[in-house]
Length: 369
Image (cartoon, rainbow, N blue to C red; front, side, top):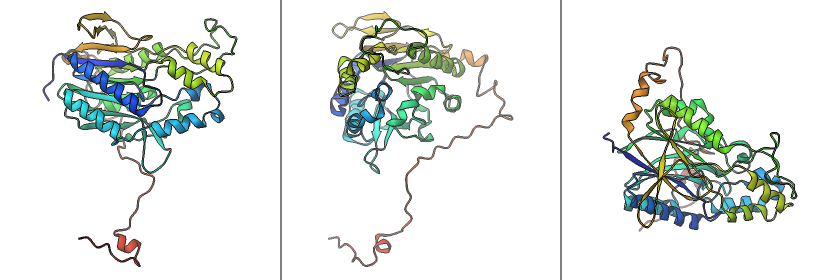
């Protein structure tokens, strides 16, 4: 498929309207329109941008989180629901591709949720619907395991685009399955923070952190994993992380047994960054655009402030590195290694009855005028 050169990517370093599907959808639509106005071909959103990332599971006891889980279940969205239809229509109107992270609910259960990502083309059609293979650590308190159905690279007019969600970028087999489909742009989506340590006491000093109590370094961990993938795949990387705002911190802290400690724990956790990488794994400098004038400001990454980070990518730059290490071609031993991926979508039950008459033999047939 012919490619656009250069490809302009817009990565939204943004916070959702915490636990509001409708308002987060409206915010996404606004950001998509801004990206399209700045001539982006692809706009990318963070992990579960709609409606939130459940950071409360890291800093509060599970027994305190029933109400937050209920709100998460109610505000999660269907992959074919009204919010997604609005996003798809925005893609069509603006003629732009969209990669969107969302918490997905399903119709076979009132509270079975998936950490999902959807790729929408510039005609508003769904190219891929991926569910995170394994919920990571405390995410298991919110999301179910996904399946291999979405391990696909989308062949689009702007290049071959793949996506993995957060910790999936640590899974070498998942990553290899995308590399083996000729991936040229790899999207990795992340939450704003990912706490790994117990909340600070209410009187603790946020800046007084030692090695044992320090939290997960989001910036380093995310960049290392994404850079490794770009180097191995010889592809460009879009590292798109969420932003944490004051409303989210307040909602997560309120109602806990120790609101001050929870608030401090959230605030002390390192913020993730949104950035770009080239096919050698080296950071690719992006730019921000002034909303009034459109003037560009060179920017390495976005971390503490919301915004849209842009980068222009020449996908022909993916070629040279393949001479050195084509891990699915000349640098692979296909006679030694054999990877098989099950792409079947999993369902909780399969019914085999052939007709309603057989299932309910005593009922008269429905009369249709």
